[in-house]
Image (cartoon, rainbow, N blue to C red; front, side, top):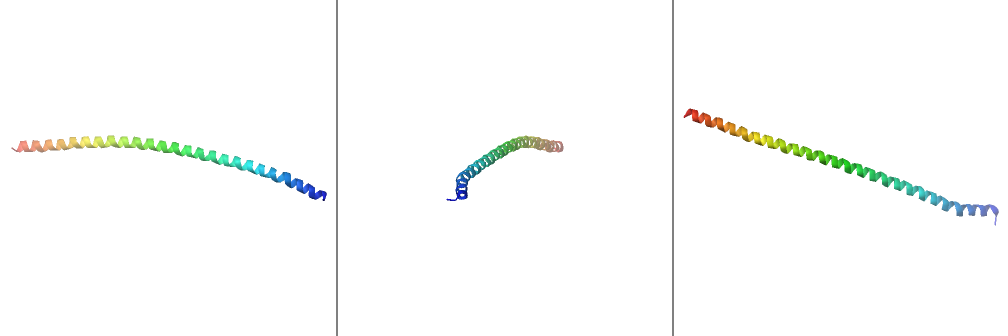
Length: 93
């Protein structure tokens, strides 16, 4: 066999597996990095969703208070109007 052929064959037997191992290692690191980034994004999204849920809950509580105020005052207002009507009726008689 030719000496150059033997060197090329030896090079192929050693370099192809080395290249595979290096590429495999780089791919694994890249995939691990992407997985970590997705986890971080998921955590941030969950945190934002929790913050929005808290804000919505606070707004709902405020709306309930405002509805109660409007309803209570509405009842008072209705009673005042009724009292005025009663006073007019009493004054006329």
